Length: 275
Length: 292
Ligand SMILES: Nc1ncnc2c1ncn2[C@@H]1O[C@H](COP(=O)(O)OP(=O)(O)OP(=O)(O)O)[C@@H](O)[C@H]1O
Ligand SMILES: [Mg+2]
Image 1 (tube, rainbow over the protein chains, first blue to last red):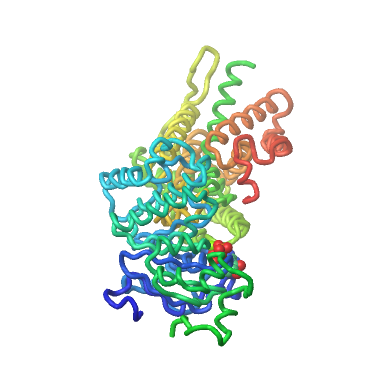
Image 2 (cartoon, protein in one colour; image 1 turned 90 degrees about the horizontal axis):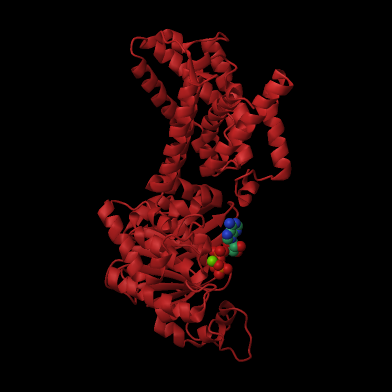
């Protein structure tokens, strides 16, 4: 990283390759850095490999039939590729998944109890529960409700809450905005920034909605078909014409379908791909 | 129906319920149907024969040792066998339990032959009938089975409902991936389910052997308890309790009013009947069905 030189990264991913069923390669060498206490966005279209990247960091289980087949993932300096999710959660890497993010047949309170938090006394567990209800006051009156009956927004809040009870150092969020109304998204975005500010938690955020992601994040990566094609500080990315054209929906004619196609044309400015 | 008949139904239902609890625990947590459950129950009874032989003067110690062995047995089965099948197709795991059952049956005949053993006799215990009501009598051991079934079900209910590990077991059954992502070690939860499952099965086997001895055919009771679990829906303890009552009532009625030879057939007739009407069982959740 040349543009964020200060501290050591909390998460360092180098040339990460991931395959499903041993043959279907979904990530073809992704390199990214997440500095402590920052919010980093990973954006891209459907099927770009965003979920795969987060799942590789959080860990696969047998039923996924997925594996890291190359490259490395370092968390606080230690290599963690192909570690099971519970071990990574114990290290402080906690995921808010894209789908199936709560246990539908457990109550809201049980969804918080369920987390097997590392080194937490029962007093600390209570403190963590209270913290969740302080961050998401809307959940407090729903304690006894089955999570399967919650609205999409409430479910997302509960997913954040149950992740926070795991005491994350790095919070991985897969699709903050998916299926939620704009006001709810704004509200959640504010809370993500509060989580970072008040709890000092680092956030790696995956989004299809590039506008939302770049508004929350400090730094952004764009991936397409398993490759990082563009990266930079969020403010800078927001101003780039390619981003405005292909991801923020400000395109006017000249329809090139993907950023890579555009990049490969000589008329374009200096390449932003790393290396 | 005479009060004696009702008492017989309650005792048989308690036996089936105590045995089905183990089917439900393992299925609910890992969606694996443990078809070696009856054999594991029988081994539990044989272990009591062994500990009774070692400590005939100290029945409490012998019973405790056998009960603890029942718990350890499930942990061992998970650690050396089932653990390697997590993440594989559920069918593969079920086939392995069938193989395990056949193996255990063979081993038990090799070790204990087909002879009948009476651990109660080793302790010098008699098993007198008691009059619980005028004209209604059941054996002391049967009374103990009913009491134990109530205790086990109450304890399991409280455990699953109110303790963190109980909630984690329920969570792992719903979504194993999310459970892992919430810091729960799946292997620990599955091992616990297996341990509790063989523990309760062993308790059933031990009490049955105290009541009427143990021989190589005891595993059949495990097979007959299976319809009780399935009638209830396999993922519901309450369902198993009701299923056990239905199967026991049908069986006792058939023995009493039709033909005692029907005893081994009736549980499966009830099963077919219920599955024809409600394929997901009486209390099971419909969405669980495709996972069997
Ligand atoms: N379980 C799986 N088995 C096989 N291929 C998979 C599996 N999961 C994802 N893939 C493939 O991997 C690629 C990346 O998928 P991924 O879910 O990571 O994309 P994504 O960027 O999260 O997309 P979306 O925005 O739609 O969530 C896709 O081509 C997808 O088809
Ligand atoms: Mg995705």
